[in-house]
Image: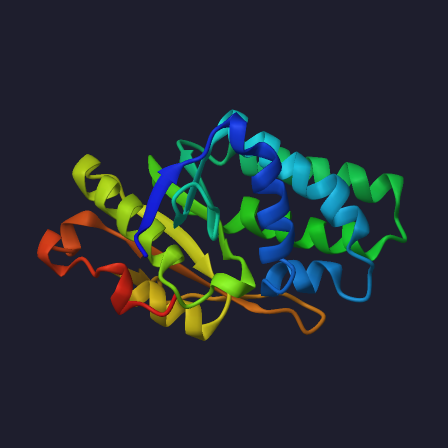
Length: 217
């Protein structure tokens, strides 16, 4: 079965919301933010807002068989840290309105970290998130997205940045040409450790690009 990567559009909105709600439930940062809390609000409020913003301001790339969405990713074209500062301010406003809500407290921690630590090297492409629907994991859909987007980054000679959230994902990203920066950021309260990584086109020859079926996504 051929897996293809494509950019999603507004016509995919409902399918994107459904796929992300399912696929991100066990993503480690999301799981940490939602720990001990029902995910009803996450699926009904946060996910639609995330998808709508990404469709408006960023690029959503998906992969699967035909028009199916097995994996989904959000890519930002970053030219300053202004948006990260704005998102941190929004999270702090949410916390002021609900100071006892742990989800809001942890969102402030994450957004403050991004605003403070995101690299000041512009422009670059930022892989904000990539998730795969559980029943389609291991089929190569996530790798198809990465192969397509890193080829585009190489052709444009623009670096790409991400934070791996597990050692396993860091190893997979390394096989795609990403390299760790040598620093890590551990979230408090038994949170995960984020591993910043760069993909630099000049460091990866086109012949070194890995095809999806060689990766574990």
